[in-house]
Length: 151
Image 1 (cartoon, helix red, strand yellow):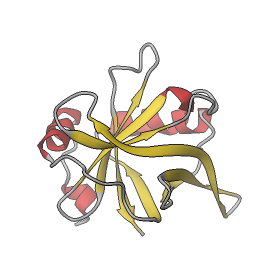
Image 2 (image 1 turned 45 degrees about the horizontal axis):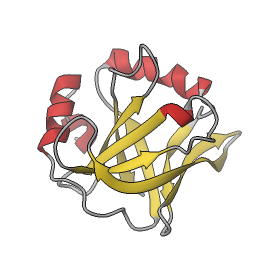
Image 3 (image 1 turned 45 degrees about the vertical axis):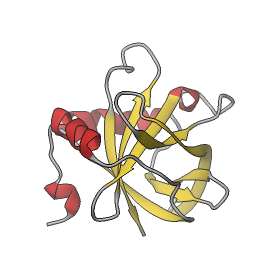
Image 4 (image 1 turned 90 degrees about the horizontal axis):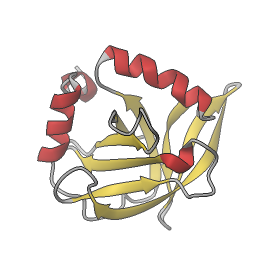
């Protein structure tokens, strides 16, 4: 059983797990992290078209660099590309107590990424549980959970 399978599948339970994790105190060291959507099947199914709409079709994860910069990893025509830069910092969790690793797309990022942020906390096994929030009407109250695993 993978840890993703062991994670809760209900959105409420995933958010409760996120709230129970210790606050982040540092940005991860440079490395490649593979991503996986988690949560209810309906939410995962809804998220895939949104990735395509937002130019992240073929999303595989994120590449962290030592300078606090992060890039999304996508696969296109059997080739991996790093696209859509992100700024990483430690900041107050937007929906609860404590700090989280904040991945925020710059204001000049292509739409809709300039309205997206990811907040992450580390799971006991070293993976990161992420919650994506989209600052747009109809999406602002619907978090999208994922995990990142160091490759």
